[in-house]
Length: 562
View (cartoon, one colour):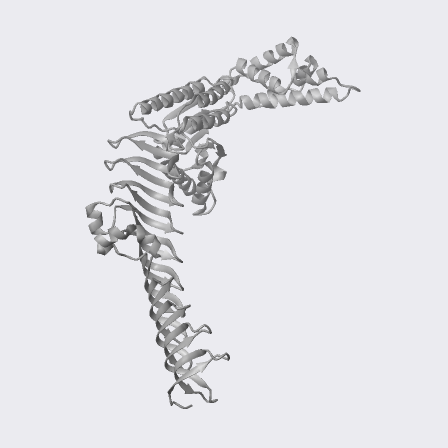
């Protein structure tokens, strides 16, 4: 290859100058650009002027489009590479480093002129505010990495991480204002608005939000520019006003509300920024549940305890309305008594009442026992407890035959289950109610053997055996619920048989379950009688007759149903 250079003009086929500058011959004898030169388009506009090596732009040069400068800087093998300035509509658009024709490395991005014109006076009066749009790192033509972004008036808007042209990662956002203070003009920035994490130009993740006066207003989880998740709101004096769940910046879900002195005055459910109040609509729902409870046969202790709790919670709600502290109590309960005394039924009703009173977020009912909590291998019990607790969170976890959790002092698996439940009662004390149930004597022994567990319970409800009259009332209720009727003779037989049952002397008498089983067996006897008939009327399908109960007595149903 020859290295002899010469100045030369090369032309388009129509005779217009295509290139003017240094050339040399390649191995085939053709002229190639080499040295300083200029390329023209067919309208004689300069496209490029600068340095060439072997027909490629290499070194410093300037690119034009229709006579307007679009780039000035360094080239390597025809590509913008190194330091340079990119222009847009004749104005400086970007200044910094390039790689493979793209902005890549540290650089400065400028606003279009018409964007900053309204702020020309403030930028002139305060030269240090004559700032670009952005300065920081670029990758593949986009803002990526650390950087600073400025408002059109020159005040700092944001500093921190960027990802593909967007604020993304950890950073700080500052307030915008048309009337900055003297101090803000001197500092070149206003009050910090937010510091934390961003995603696609929005506050997203953990962060802190400040007022225009520089006071911490909120901190916690943000999603799409609004607080969503767990967070804390503050009074102007720096005391927390609320700690709990938020949705789109509003208190929504479980949380604690404080007065300006730092005392907690309410703990419970919030909806759209307001704590759950006992509105007329909620009062009607509570009344329905109270009527359902009062409509149950017997259960005087359970009814009294629940009425006491309802009254307590209502009064605490009124105290909060007047800015007084709401006294927190434990809502976990111990139900003791024989099977069939209504413990499960009452527990379900309690969950729903607690929901409407704001004690629980959902009020649903989850029932379990030792098999549902205790595993046979080390480490598995904790996982089973966590799974059950997760399912019950927001509602009532009812543990039947709770004393079976720990069979003896050496029951390591049972102790692990107790430890897991204790942790759940502490961690979820504002949105989980645990009710343990079982035989009276066994429950007393169980709680005495687990002082840490017993201390978590403040309400003990004894479910006594049903009396003979109450057992009859339960039978009558079952008949009514299932569309069965009977006459006086049948009723006389039923009463006489029930009076012969030594309720108090029968170990582990099944109470309501006994009556339900008896009812089902009498339904079977009636079915066997009716199936022999050629035709059956609607009234006959509903009617228990004397023959049915006499047959039951002959089959010793009342004695064998235990």
